[in-house]
Length: 194
Image 1: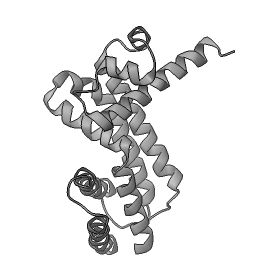
Image 2: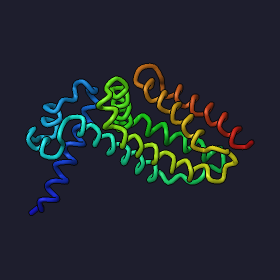
Image 3: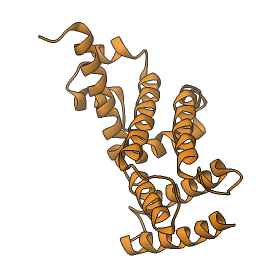
């Protein structure tokens, strides 16, 4: 029989999974507490026992997305960028993660927070955690690189990857993405060789 702590953790996980899935599938406006509870198979009472309001749940979902993205990138186990081949593997993995349901969830929340000051406020800790994860990854990836600010380079790469991820469902074919990644690798490799 599950302990109270295990039941609590399971309920929170169900709510987070439902929130992440709904944000990806239906968008911010349609991710209501009712829809989340229906998707999770839980009552709204269960939701409000663990989260004081919808924004708190959305912020927790953002933190979970940051954790999942960091874990997924770490699991790819791509070492320091010491060759163009390794750089291409890193970029391919970043594009894969950028196109994931979790990252689409992240984009949905970032776009909503742009015009919702209260959401932006509760999202700040998740955003800081996401950037901490990204920047610690940059430190490992570009440790042997002569680039003076690897974090700035990673920000450029993430911006490109995010742009590709937003365009993929609408206008980019797999060949377009492959060509863009190859071009980005060419540009980055020349910077990394300076």
